[in-house]
Image 1 (cartoon, rainbow, N blue to C red):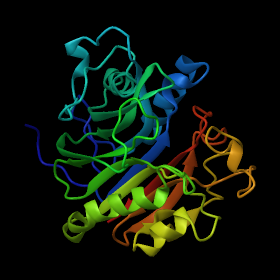
Image 2 (cartoon, helix red, strand yellow):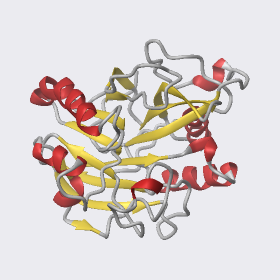
Image 3 (tube, rainbow, N blue to C red):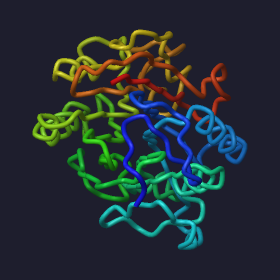
Length: 305
């Protein structure tokens, strides 16, 4: 057991702590993972960005592994919090690979991965959360879609973690589309919101991820979340830019472009159940602040306590 530490402190493998007390950084990114062209180069860029920014919590979506790849060696699973019912981790599991790269660089990285569905017929795909410096204390997972079939691409679930020394809950979220006839966003949101109602009474809850909720489209997904009492950290942030997390046409939106601006959408969000002091909301891995590593850009907020 290490010495106690508070919000915003970082513990490296060597015990060093470069970041001051009272500041928290949290990052979300739909990574697209192994589906990305030039994956190894983009992996390098992603890890380099994390090493420079050192967010406390990283939520990732579309985190995959090749379903028939060899299993990862046990010694490379250091820092993993096994999610109940989780399948075995394979050598190219994106969350495990990122965590190992960070550990090799001297960062104490703890992580959890939840497989949700078979993607593109060959990937075990799900969501993950990484914690830099604080071991994961407990996890939460539950489905938000009506369909719960691993071979159905519409299957959705969320993963949450609590980390040592901190009461807040952090969830990695990947929602469906507003107008999906079989799995509409509204039904998934109602399930998610109800499941977290009690938890949010006692702790701050952070929802981080790809909500497929364009912020400029009124009366649909984005407005539904806001009307439920959640705070959009982009709006509460004192410093922010344009906020676009998708630059143009990506999978799932090609047939929906009549309703949104294809030049840029803010689909990825960090919501909080409480009105925390957010000093900044930044878009990362967008070609300006670090190279592009996915078909989405990342969102990082800095919170002051």
